[in-house]
Length: 485
Image (cartoon, rainbow, N blue to C red; front, side, top):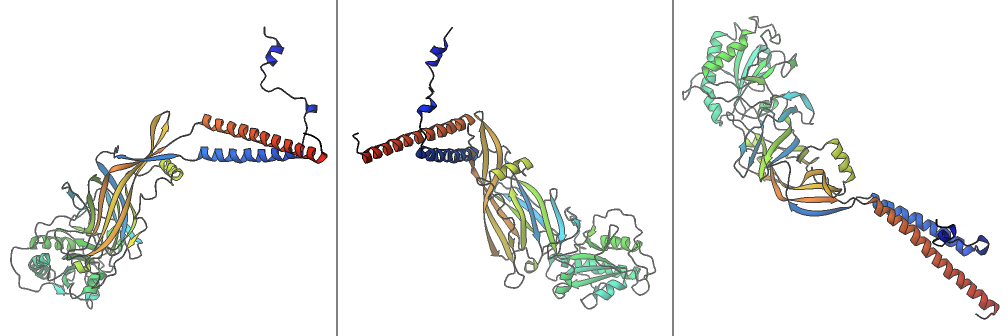
C-alpha cells in the first residue's frame, strides 16, 4: 500500500505557509485587474460560442422538389375587371397554359383596393360557338338605343332590361348585331313594351357613351348585361340583380334565354322583379356581373424550372378589347418562389436572417401605377426576375441536416408602350446553380478548453507581472537606502 508521504511527493500544487507570504497593494491591484480581464474574456468567448458561424459555397442545383417550381402571388389591379382577368403561364419548352383557375382566386375590389364581396366566379368563361346568325346583315331596329340620358329611366321602367354594350369596330359585336336586332324584334312582338312591359332589349355604343360603359365596368365587347328593375348591382339572399350573359349568340339561343328571364316575372309590370320565384338552378350562360372595375388575384401556379413567364391580362375568345381602355396598374402584396415556410422554419429564418431571407420576396409592397390618358395608353408592365436557390444546412454528428431552403431573386421592372392589349408579364429565369450556406456548430469541449485557457493564462500573466513589479519596487528601495545589491 502506498504511504501518504509518497503520495505527497507527486503534489503539483505544494502549499506555502501563510505566514511566509506577503500581501501588497500592487498585488491587490493586479488581482482586481486580472479578475476583470477574466470576466471580460469569458463573455467574449461565450458570445463567440453562441454566434452563428457559416461558410458559403456555390454548387449545382440539387433541389429536392423535382423539376417544378411553385410561384405564390397576391396582386391587386384597381382597373382590371375580374370578369376577363386571366392568369397564363408559358416557358421556353413550349408549355402554354391559359386562364388557370384551379389554383387561382379572384375578388372584386374598388379603387381603394377594398374587397366588395365574396370570391368572384373563378371558372373560365363558357366557350361561345355560335357568335350570331349566318346572315350578313339584318335590317330592323328592334333594340332601343340607350344613352347616359335615358338609361336610368328605362332600367327603372322595365322589370328586365337586357343591354348589349358594343363597339362598332369590334368583329364580335358586328357578328352579334343581326341576331341581336332580330331577337329584339321577336321579343317586342311577343312582349309589347307598351301593353306587357316586362322586358326590353337595348344597345349602348361604347365609343359614344364612354362614361356609361365605365360606370357599368364594361371592358370587353360585346358585353350583354341583364338589369332587373329596382336595383342595380344588389345582392339579396344569394340573388344578384346585375348579371352577364355568356351563352350562345344566335337568334334561337337569345330568344330562349329572354323567354327564361320573362317567365319568372308577373304580367303586372309594376311588381318588382326582385321577387324571384324561379328555382335556384345554376345557369352556366349567366353569371353575376362585376360590381367594380378592380380585381385582386391570389393563388399559386407550378412551373418548370426553365426560363418562362407568368402573364396576367384581359382574355376572352369571344370578346374584343380596346387597348387604350385597358389599364394593368397593380400593387404587389406577394410574389415569391418555392414552398411556403412552416412556423418552425420561420423561427429558424429569424435566427439566420443576416445570412438568408433578405430577397425572397423583392416585389412585395411595390406598386406600379399608370395614370390613364392618351399619353399613357397601351402600357404593358414587365418584370424581369432572376432566381437563385439558397439552401441552409447544419452539420451534426458529421452529417448534413437541412434547416431551410428558399428562392431569392433580383427584380427589374419596365413600362413598355405597345399596340396590343396591355398585360403584366413576370419573366423568370431560374439559375442552374445554388448557394449553399453551411452552419458550423461549435464543440462545447472546445468552449471549455478556451475558458480554462483564459483563466490559466490571465492568472499566469498576472503572476509574472506581479513578480516583476514587486522585484522592481524592492530594487528601487535598496537604491534609496544605499545598500549594495
